[in-house]
Length: 105
Figure (tube, one colour):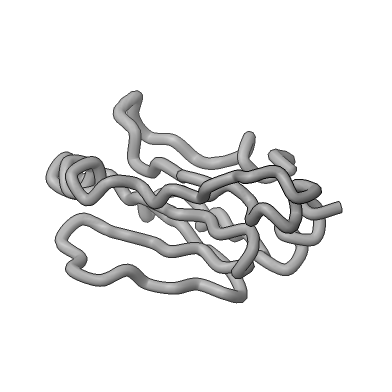
């Protein structure tokens, strides 16, 4: 699951991106009651104000909701996530089909 996550280029110690994974639906947890709570609006606004890109990973829907500083609405990504915080580094690419297949087993 985290194979590609260890190779993310970093240019500083401050967070540039924060992923948040929603809990799977109850049907995928053998009937146990698991509530997927979206991150609070306040938390997202703080991250955006601080210049942090915020991802919400929805395992059930197989999409990533990407919030960038200044966004009023998220970008919904269903095929791949490309992230390049610094033009001097190559873009980091996550193919979502492969990622969700690995996560879901």
